[in-house]
Length: 467
Image 1 (cartoon, helix red, strand yellow):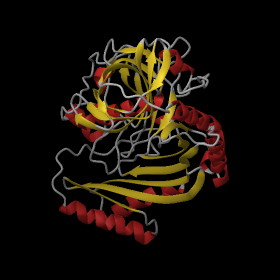
Image 2 (image 1 turned 120 degrees about the vertical axis):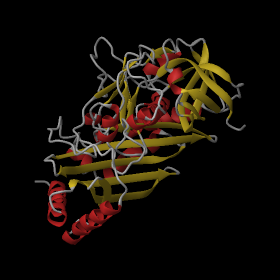
Image 3 (image 1 turned 60 degrees about the horizontal axis):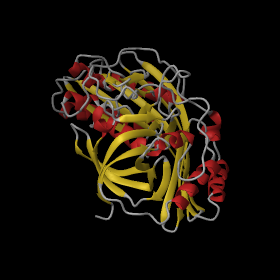
Image 4 (image 1 turned 30 degrees about the vertical axis):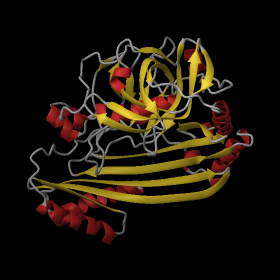
C-alpha cells in the first residue's frame, strides 16, 4: 500500500469510528513535488522545490455535504480534519442534488510516469536553461524550466480505492531584441524530450524577425495561428464550452449532436496521456473523451453532480474544491490523417524547425497558401465578453507578421481582437490544420493543451494594442 493510499484509508476509517456508519465519506491524499528553475536577464535567479501532501475529505450526512482539507498527515492532523468536517457537515445547508459516491471501478491506466523526470536534478534543468540562453546568441532571455511529480490515492466508504502517479516537464522562454520578444514553449512527459537549444533558437528567430513592426488598420484578416496561440482557444473552449456545469445552466455554446465546427476539427480530452492522476476528485476513473468528432459536438465533461442533473454518467472530470464545474483540462486538437488513425499527442515525425519567425514546417506550409493575412504567435490576456457565444477579447503577443502571396513581408504591431472562438472554427472557416500537434504547457502544472498550427479564414482584430 502506498503512503497516500494508507492516508486516505485512515481518514475513511476515522470517519467510521468518529461518525458512525451513516456518513458517506470520500478521502483523497495527493503528494505533489514541483521543482522550478527560473531565469531572467539570461541568468538563473531562482531554483526552488515545493513538496506538499494535501489530504481532502468530503462527507455527506443527513442530507448535508461539507468538505475539508489539511496538509497535516500525523494521526492528530488527520483526526482534526475528520472532526472539523463532521462538525461542518451538521451545520451545512441541505444538499438535495447530492449524487452519491462513486462505485468501485477499475482504472484504465496507472498514470504517465517517468522516473528520470520525477527525480530530475537542478543541474538537469539548468542544462536546458544554458542551452536556451546559448542558442539565443547574445539576446536577453527569460523563462523557466520545471518538473513535477504527483502521486495520489482515493478511498471512499462505497468501496472505491484507487491510486496513481504522474510526472511531467515544461519549458517556457522568451528572447528579446530591440525591445520586442520572441517566445517558445513546450510540455512533455519526459524532461529528456525538452530541447532547450531548439526552444532558444525558435525564440531568438522570432525576436529578430519582429523588429521594426508596421501598424495595420483593424479589420478581419485571414490568420495562421501557431500552436502557442491555438492553446488559448483550447483553454477557453475547455473552461467555458465543454464544462458540464455551464452546459446544464445553458451558459455554454455546446449543443451535443450539432455540427458546430469545421469537419477538420476533432477535439479529444486525454487525461491518461498527461500529467494528471488517472482518476478524478470523486474517484471516477479517467478515460479519453471525444468532445468534437470531425466538426460534430459529441459530449461535454461531467462530474457526478452535473451528470446526474443531465441524466447521464460522469466522464471523470470532477475537480476538488472547484465551484467552476468539471472541465477537460488535457484537451488536444489533432488532425486525423491517413497515417494517424485517431488524434494523439504522440504523433511521430514532428515537424522540423525552419528559419525565420515561422515555428516549424507545418506552420510554414499553411503560410505558403495565404494570399494576404497574418501569422500570429500568441494570444494572451484573453477575457470572455459573452460566455454563451464565447466571444473573447485579448491581445496578440510575441510576434505578428503580415503575409502576402505566401511570403512573410513585415512584422506587425500587436492587435487587440474581439472574436467568437467557436465561430472562428465553424464549418468552412478552417482553411488548414497542421499535420503535427505539439504539447503546450499551462500555468497550472496538471493542465496542458495539444495543438497544431491552424489556418483560419478570418479573425476579427478590433484595434491596436496601444488604443
